[in-house]
Amino acid sequence: MKPDRRQMVGVAAAVVALVLLSMIKGTNAFGSSTQDPRLTACGVGLNSANVPIASFELPAASKIWDYLPELGISPELSSDNNPAFVVVFQDGFRITVAGKPGNSGIATLSGVVCVIPSNGVPIFYSEVSRVGFHAP
Amino acid sequence: MTALPHSRAGRVRRLPPTMRRGRPLQRLAEQAGKLRDEGVASPERIPRRAYPIRLKWLPRLGISVVAALTMQTMAALPTLAFGPDTANCSARNSHTTGAETYVAGQQKHGVSGTIEGQNLDQCTSPHLVQTSGSFAWSVLEDGGTGSSGGAVILQIGIGKCRDPFSFGCGSDMRYLWAWGRDSTAPGCAGWSHIDPVPNSVGTWDGAAHDFKVYHQNNAYRFFIGASQVASVPESMVCWTPTRAQWFSETWDDGDAVGGSAGNPLVTSSTNYANAENGGFFWTSLSAPCRFAGDTIRHCSIVSSTSLKTWTER
Image (cartoon, rainbow over all chains, first blue to last red; front, top):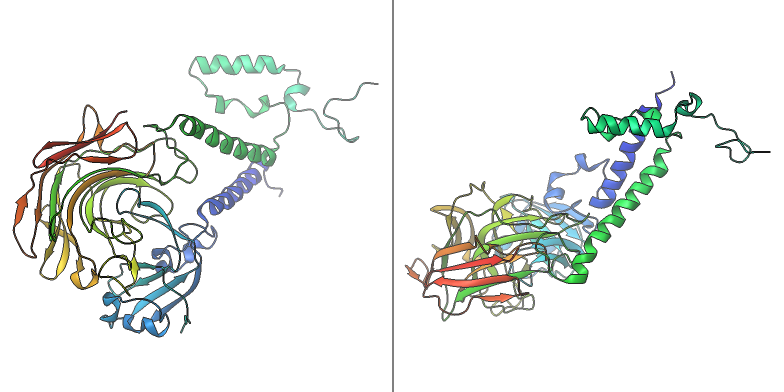
């Protein structure tokens, strides 16, 4: 049976809307529902600028310097022997920040590394050199 | 020889039913207008048969999207041309403004202020990708050292914001807190850099609350009223807070700092602590409330322990 034209138009319009939405949000509109929620928590899919280079789990947050030797002093990680999830981003990561007037609002950051420690609250490090970086 | 209507490239199209039946479009339009005037039908409910040609939905959709984008751009033009607006969102995302006062002089271990429960104003007619927001905070900071200036901060307060790059925004009133450290700030050489990404906490109840950051028992603790809602171990803070500060800020020209002239946003009972686990002292605010931005947003010291911020709108 030939589909009703209005149905076809409706389906086509929905597809176009999804594509447009994905262009605006920078996400894969068809696959976002299956994304690891930890990636979402780190800003993957938040906008098209947030492109991950690598993501991996660590048996202990304190092991992060084995893979990102240039990450600076970070007591919150060095003293944490619980598992952590790490996402390393391309430069150009965009996120809004609080802070003082003149420095708040949209920030475009380089060297962003998101770490989700065992408490589940992501920490965003920026200006991290990727010299010596390798994923486990 | 006269060409048949709707013919193209030698192909003859069937006339739409409305035309085949000889029902003039004018009459249909009048009929639709009459129904609308009588409240019987909305324009959307005009029978599809009234359209003279077959729906070419895809080109029409494309044209609509282009038209929408054009209208968005046009909507931004008055703001760009005539400066600050206090209603419509501007195209200048992340043009922040703020109004502040502070207490300095020695290391600060606590800041507290009662921010009234006013629903803050946010710009309207947002663009496709819009960052905007209005906030009021109690803040510990170091006076703006470090290359990124405002990142060296511990803050808690209220805000309403929207943007596609944030975790803490939702175009509704929220309690927010944030903290940051900057590897270029004194005491932070060799440290990693953390930007103050706002975190949403709790549910805004519309009431006035005391918002406090307090260095207590080896951690910087964030309070709403008597409830601690977050904390940062002092071992994570490499910089030294030297200012207890209260400020309002916005992210877009169309947002209003604080309240309005008739109903300014008041922060009262401002006080601060000079020692970890130490007592709090009332402020003696007297210095001008500073404002960085334009001439329609204001800040004023009301008394030794209160300030108000507002925007002419």
